[in-house]
Image 1 (cartoon, rainbow, N blue to C red):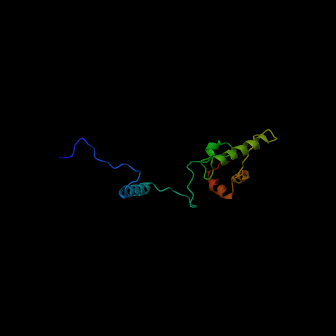
Image 2 (cartoon, rainbow, N blue to C red):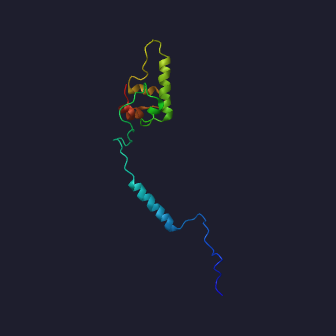
Image 3 (cartoon, rainbow, N blue to C red):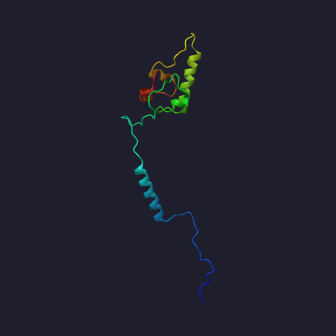
Length: 126
């Protein structure tokens, strides 16, 4: 007699391991995807430019706006704002003080060094 058509055939259980063809196809897809990405422009110093147009005033900008500057993350941006607010409170005269008169003044903020100043200087407005 023949095989009973109502009985099921044993099937391969998915064990989580993929065959070599699947791995090769995944690798080729990844290579093609990476090649299709547009190349990102960089400055002459090899650092990507800030995604901003125009300039930012460190004397008035909120911390989240400062984070678009190169090498300025949330922590440093908050330190800039904190320093700016402290300088305003410590002012003895009635005039509105300016915490930062030039880019070099930002070096007073802990975490901002000469390399960072060089990269963000062109994006600042005083």
